[in-house]
View 1 (spheres, helix red, strand yellow):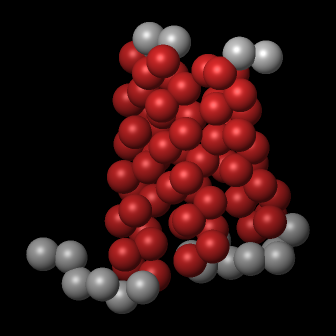
View 2 (cartoon, helix red, strand yellow):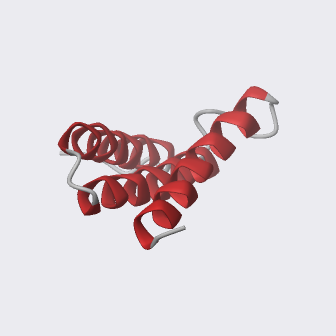
Length: 81
């Protein structure tokens, strides 16, 4: 497995882990761990997509990262101006 695939698999694995943990009710979907797993997973998947020059998933995963950061900030009750 090459570098790009390894990074992508780790990223997607983190996103799927967050989804599974939420679906199995181990973590709440508005909890900090849920957002942290999504942030790191989406950021890694975005980076892997960038490395293979696949723009649609760079946009998708980049947006997923930003939305997850926003969710984490709300969960931490950080005021967003």
